[in-house]
Length: 500
Image 1 (cartoon, rainbow, N blue to C red):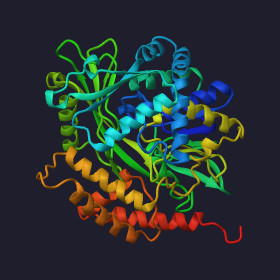
Image 2 (cartoon, rainbow, N blue to C red; image 1 turned 30 degrees about the horizontal axis):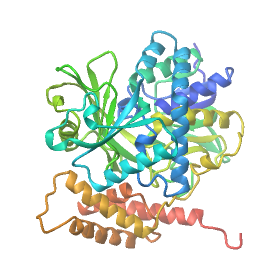
Image 3 (cartoon, one colour; image 1 turned 45 degrees about the vertical axis):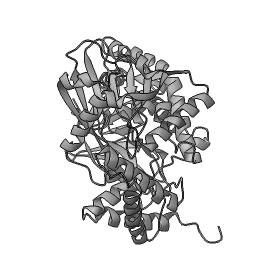
Image 4 (cartoon, rainbow, N blue to C red; image 1 turned 90 degrees about the vertical axis):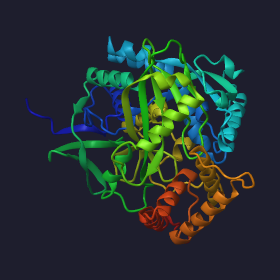
C-alpha cells in the first residue's frame, strides 16, 4: 500500500479541537482529503486529562465584563452551551455504536456552584458575578440551600454559604468523547497519522505541508495548528517575532477515584474560579462509582515534565474539606496530568494568519473542550471559504498584539491581590494585627520592578504576571527576559505606521 504524501487539510494535534475541526470539515466536504496528526498516547495533552465540564456561566469571573474581548469570549462560550446537546447527538450518530452511545451516555447535565466558608474575596466576587450573569441573560438556574446539594458533604468548618444550580451546564467523559471523535473521523475517511510534527513547511508566505518526527513530509494545501501549547514552537521559524502572542503551559493535575462508600455527587459540583486559578470540581462518571477530581493550575513558560506533588496534596486536601470528606476513603484509580494552552493575554488564537493556508485553533486554556463545537464550525467554514465577518471572532485573530483588558496599574494591583489571597489559600497565617496588605505591598513592589525592566509595559492578566513574579522571587530570571524580548518584538511588529 502506497502511503499518501499529500492531503488537502493537515490538522496538527489529535485533541478535542483538532478532531472536532477534522470531523466537521469532513462532514461538510466529504471529498476533501484530511489528515489528523498526533501520537495515540497523548502524553501531557490537555484533552486527555480534562474533566470536560460544560461550563459557560460557571467560568464567569469579575473580569468577564471588563473589556469587549472578554465579552466576546463569553459570547463564544454561550454559543457552545446552546450547541452541545445537539452536537453530542450528531457525534454519536457519526461515531456509531457502541462508541457513540457511550459518549452520549457520559453526558451529565447540571452543575452546582458552591461558595465555601473559607473562600477569599476574589472567589466571592466571581460567585457574585456569576449570579448576576445568569439573571441578566435569563439562564435557567436555582439559588438553593447548600445543604440540598446531593453529595456535598464538606468538613464542618468549610460548609458552603451559598449555592446555585445551573440547569444546562454539566460534564461529559472526555475520554469517551475523544473515542467517539476518533470513530467519527474514521467513518468520514479522515486519515489518522500516529506521529508528531517537527516543522511547518512554508514557502513564498504560503503553507506547503508539515514535516513529521520520522523525517517524512506530508504536503497540504491548508494546515490547522491544534497542538495545544506546542503550537508556538511550530511557528517560531514561520512567523516574525512578536507577530502572534506566545503560548504558555497551564499545567494541571486531576485524579480519577472510585468511591468505597455509597452516595456521592450525582451532578457536577464546583467552586467559582479562585485567585490565580480555576475552581475546584468533583464530577461523577455515570454508571460507575468513579469520580473525577480536579484540578490544579500552574502556568509556566517552558513545558513541565509532569505533575507536582505539592499541588496534588493541596487538591486532595481542599476537595476533601470543601466538597466531600468521604474522598479520603476513595480508591485512587488514575492520575491525570496535562498542559492547557494559554496565551500571553489569556485570549484564544482562532483562525488564519498572514501565511496563506495556515490556521490556528489553540490558546483556549480551560475553555477548549466546552467551546469545541463552535470553534470547529467556525474553522470548517474558514477552511472551505472566506465566511462572513464576525466582530466577536475578530478579537481572537492570531495575528495581533497582546490584548489589554485593564491598565498597567490595575494589572499590578490585581496581581498583588491574587498573590495575597493565594498565599492564604496555601496556608499563610498572619497575626491578628496584620491584614493582607504587607503581602500585597511586597508583590506590588516586586511587580513594579519587573515592569520597569520590560521596556514596553503591557497590562498582563494577573495569572501571567504572577508567574513571572513567583519565578523571579526564586531567582529565575528567564521569564522576565523572555517577556521583555517578546513585548519589544510585539511593539515593533504591531506599531502603527506613521501617517497611516
